[in-house]
Length: 195
Image: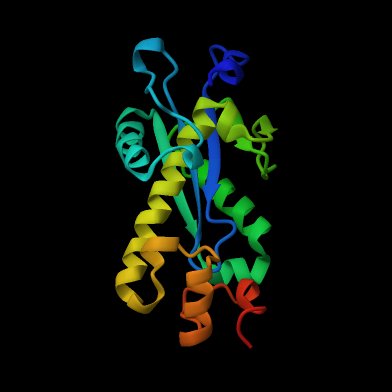
């Protein structure tokens, strides 16, 4: 996971990733993180968040926050997603997450998405599988968003947000058709399911 980082030895590297581009409900969450790369400070088990169990992600989330040189997490709400589309909302969230860092990096590594910044950046396909910093950001974004969706499940108990996290599962679509939309549903994503 450090092969990419090794190319920038001696530089301060920020990794950026998002969670929640595909769901029918809830925000997209973007995280930016600068991790220490000294061997004695590396966290074992860091990987693309989709390849980890929820329990493992939760454990790593706390370790990443504890060990990060700097990190930032940003939510872009569903109204903004509906207004500017999900790709632009993701880019906006990533840009804000980078700008909110307390330490300015020398280079930014993103998971495929090119963002607006004057800093040098590398946009890596499947970056969350190839970069330690991007994988760390993917864990922060995923855990933060999952926790948020669990809170929304308490507000909207009919929708099972804690189970599917807003994604378009069979259960979610059935509930959407039965009970209608909530304030958290993305209008632009649910048109084909409800009139």
